[in-house]
Length: 100
Image (cartoon, rainbow, N blue to C red; front, side):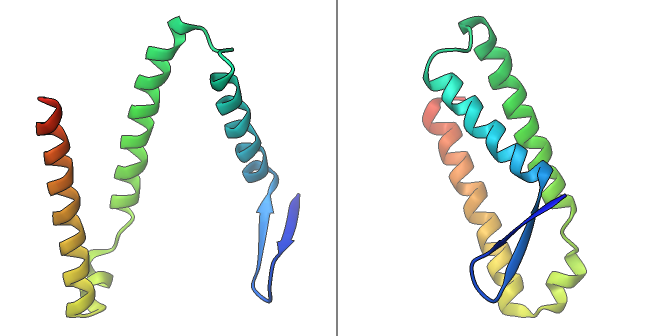
């Protein structure tokens, strides 16, 4: 089942799973905001969220074809390298600022 959302000449169909995911995220955010999630579950949920974030970031990185980036040319390759170096520097600054 797909639900079509057309905002312009460019159309995008959202699947039922995508729509349910959005609803679930909003419902969980509301549950947390209203204090409906027990305090004892917050630490394990935070750990699971961190783990899932790391896995998703790794999946995104593994999905990058380095040859395609290299074929795109020097400016694109330079932008990718610069963004990765910047991201690493910001991450290191954050780690050192909290004393890890």
